[in-house]
Amino acid sequence: MGYGHFLVLAALLFLIGTAGVMIRRNALIIVMSVELMLNAANMTLLTFSRMWGDLSGHTFALIVIAVAAAEAAVGLAIVVAVFRGRRNVDVDRLTTLRH
Image (cartoon, rainbow, N blue to C red; front, side):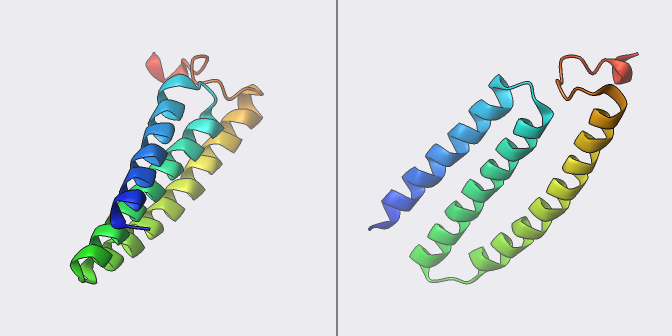
């Protein structure tokens, strides 16, 4: 497989994640879609790093993995807290912060 295949796959994963964020209203699905988008970014970083023979892409990918882990932990904690209080994680029904 060439590098183009990996870049196309990363673009498709990013588009699927973007569609999940824009279409779905469930907060858990939105968090998972953002994680998918971050993994697509990692795949792109690693592909270009491999293509150019430079290790800086690997370094950035490790940083993105660390940020994604923190984002997942905080995002899931927020989803659980909202679910315990409201018994619903639909983002359209979360109007408390608007007022």
